[in-house]
Length: 94
Image (cartoon, rainbow, N blue to C red; front, top):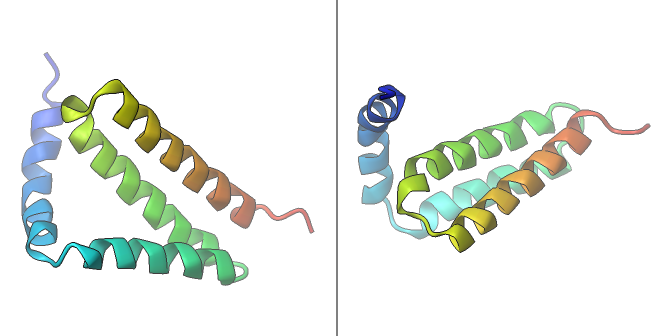
């Protein structure tokens, strides 16, 4: 039996509790602001997008056991799209 999930969950508890104490719009607006800034800032803006992708992967990992197949698919798709945007920003064609 793996001990990774319980360790990640216990390490994440203070951050999740803090996020839970914020108004619901604040995390959404923060992620939205990072995404927009990451898309609009040339050069190093992809690092902001990477922060968003890592946050999404972290919350996806924590919520995985509670999600049904449809929600897993939708959240996974959002992560793949955010990662695709990050890669295209990090390695532009010209």
